[in-house]
Length: 307
Image (cartoon, rainbow, N blue to C red; front, top):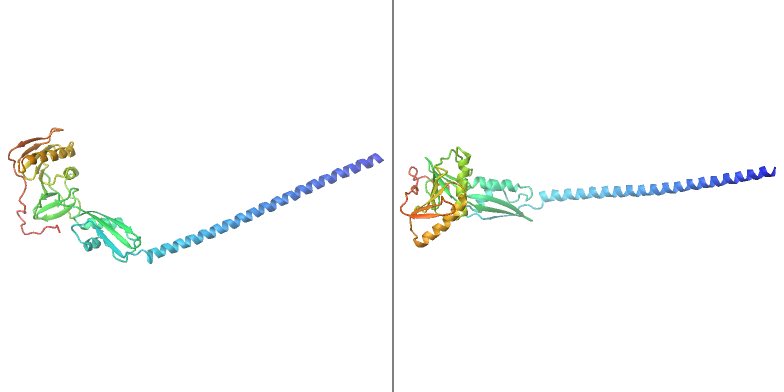
């Protein structure tokens, strides 16, 4: 009987120990739950603060943008540089920009294009903002490089083919009279048109090479045969360039050869052969004049488009 009682007491003791262990485990789980809940609550509060700060920042930015587009940064001064042909008023009018317009609402590239599209002797225009209230218009002037004869007068173009005049009566010094190509269309401030796009490419390449070589006295250009191009220098020296192969290098050789010949005789006449790379051969003698009269034969009283 005593043994049984002892066993029961042992069972009771073991059972009591298990209950205490389970109770401790339950108590630990509740602490963890409280800790997790606390962390979630802190994260939620942090997220709410972040959203609030973001909304406030966006409101501030919106107000700042609204003020900058309505109250601040309005144009108070327009500066124009680089134009030797047109006055400031003409350029500003072509740009369609007014004092009081907002600096950030104007389309600078569109305004710059309008200047070049409406003023023939402006080759390029660039518009910059200078805070807080100044707009700077930088113009690059262009000039007449070549001319074509037509019934109304001379069509004048720059080295890129931009039409500067459609009825000029006077050819200024340094303007090359082009033969062997006839424009099919010429609109002021637009690119001159030919039946073949290759013709325009050839002409602009020749004129650009002449400009880069700094040859300023080309008076005529014959491109009737693109494999036998000839240029007249100062109406007294014919440059036989041949084809357009290495044309840029040929013009550089021509500069040096012309300088050498003019150092010996400033009024020398003759032919400079550039067809054999990399040489330049000069033969003195008279050459046939291909430059037209300085005034148009049929429109002596018409006015040129040039300002």
